[in-house]
Amino acid sequence: MTKVAPPAFEAGNDASQWLIFVGATTTTPLGQVKTFNWVQDVVTDEVMRVSDSQTYYTDKGIKTSGALELWQDADNAEPIAVGGHVLAVDDTAKTLIAVFHDAEATSGSAVKTFTFTNFRITQVTAGPREGQSAGYWAYTWRSTLLAAT
Amino acid sequence: MTTKATADWLETAIVADLGVTCKKGFPAFDQPAIATGAYIEWASTSPQYGERVSSSLDRWEVQITLVVVTANEIALWSMIDLMEAMSESRTEATISSKRTRIRFAPIERAENPNGLSALRYVAQTIIQFVR
Image 1: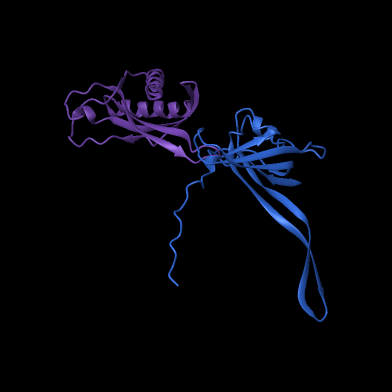
Image 2: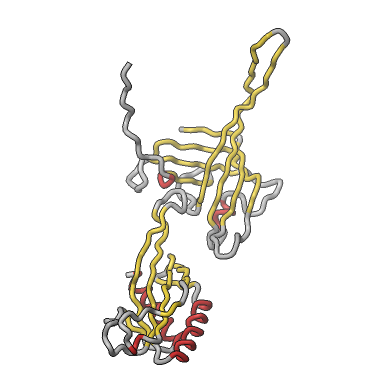
């Protein structure tokens, strides 16, 4: 069987095409995001039994967590906005929305909107870095639900 | 014109900190008569891409070359001290309403390939503006 030619490599893999918002509205995006990514895990029970080579899996739910890094801004506004300034046990969870667009320019339009419900910073690494370097806040976070629309 | 504003800021700083006249643009360095003083010339403007999510071209780095012509070796040494002090005090400025970081490259003796008497005691450096 002859080899089929693959489709052309598509543009659209650039982080400049994403906008990230805190809160339930997509009006004012964050401007100091260094990195943002997420991980989803399927939480599963495994059952095995004697005399049976098969493993039985039962899915219990989905865990969503990830990493976020913000460049230090002059007034600390964005670390406060994402709920990662000073952690407290009774912090109110946020809604975080990441929107992927089909182009970097403002003429581009939204392709997919990822909404993270109950976005909660769970770990903060902050403070000045080594001399001369730019400061940034590094977070790990969790969310109770991720929906893509 | 941010580049012009940057050069204007540098000229003002040089006059105040080094106590010499400052001309924009270099003289013809192969001429025998070159006045003492400072000369600045734009060297490069470099885009800084990919520093954050949501945007691609985020900052600019402008480099301007500074040449200071002095009358003798002792005057040159005094000038080096003044340039050191300027490097320490001028680390940030607001230029064209933007916060700009200022960094000095090593201060070095300028080459004098034609062996001109007027260019025997010359210091040069590159000043970097990131906005």
